[in-house]
Length: 326
Image (cartoon, rainbow, N blue to C red; front, side):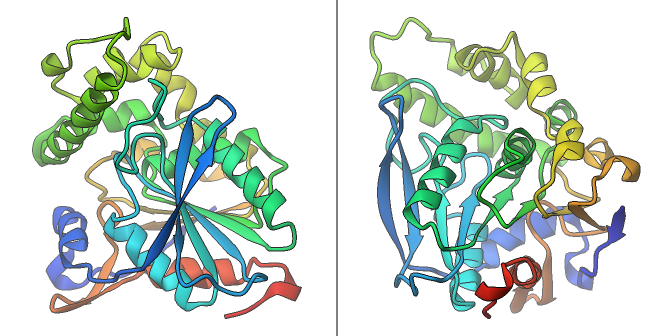
């Protein structure tokens, strides 16, 4: 079932680009964090960021997965971590490989369907904190990844999950962001991706895989020349087909809230599922406005971020009864 979202965009932010851009520019929430380096089975690492001060050892854990080229300083991460911490819950962000500010030891990176590192992190946290309930929130690329994880790991340590502005049909999204004003977002993201790829290559001067980064002019070309061959796909189309979350929704049994705005400038209606394919575990809320991870309300001089209210409210109804807190 697809439900109409309760989010209502204010008159000054009904344009999807304003929602997307101003949400980043106007956000002022800050959350103090402490880093932790977690060693991975293949000899590489991922960096975690824990909200501080550390809360009670029995408080629920909420693991955040950022979007493409995001990090702990991303506005949506900072705002959500502050909101969760204020509820008495313990947020922690997992940086995807190469996104914490330091190139990884291996050439391997991350992508929309790479679930091995998140699975290792979640299993590690479950072993470390066996008595604490745990949930996860995935934004954009991290949301598509989380859908893949939930579908592949039907038995997992999560009490609930939330997916925000996820590109569930990767091919359609790659084409959409290469058109019109959305090219501005592509240019920004592609610049960061190229920069991080060059930093990674600098750490591996003897690597045989050295595509011409300067010739890449779109996200699809980056996926064709770098993401796909680096991670064992035949090409961008093969990567998009195998890692798009849309066909995997029906396999999810973990209670999951999916939030999406119909005017998201990164996407088309191709990412919106047919209502009859959604399993009972998924609550899908579609709003008319909201942009990409925007969802601002209130006055422009004092905006409110609806996600920071809606997501904690929903999670609060999905903790085990003995762990209910607020």
